[in-house]
Image (cartoon, rainbow, N blue to C red):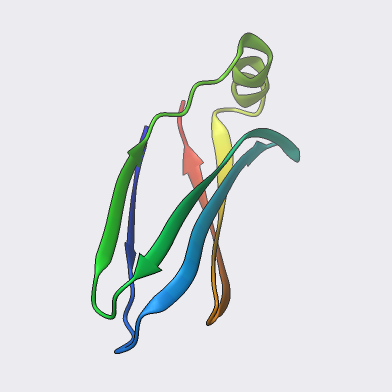
Length: 91
């Protein structure tokens, strides 16, 4: 599981907001999901806990990569697209 908290730091409303998350290990994508947030008022925060379920093969890839995963997050709205990447050790 992981927790997503997305805050609109602008003074204006963000429209058509979506959050796309992809998890990779060793260069292979093992999980992906997209959430449609919709409208997010200025200063408002969207919060969501997401459960990641991996199949046997995906879990084996994580294990063979020493438990290292990379989380790629892209937030898109009418105001632009922003991407973030972080690495975690889940072993």
